[in-house]
Length: 67
Image 1: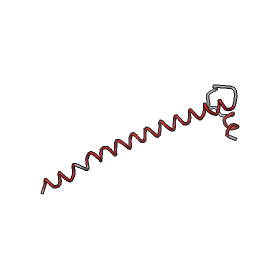
Image 2: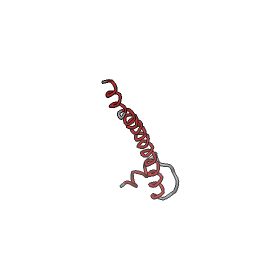
Image 3: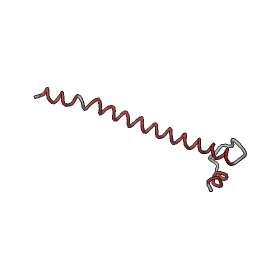
Image 4: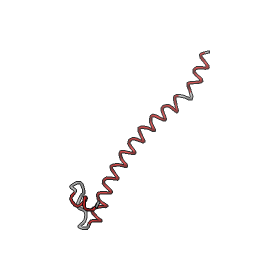
């Protein structure tokens, strides 16, 4: 069923004549897009986490020095 959908699809590039070549070309394209999106979100989240990790350890020292 998946190969039938891919045969009529316009998003895949023509790398070969057989169904397996078309399937793996489409798989590579979609998986690369997904991986790039995932890594972009993970990098953004890691930046936020590192900001809090660097900020909060110094907070108790600042509070204790003010008393």
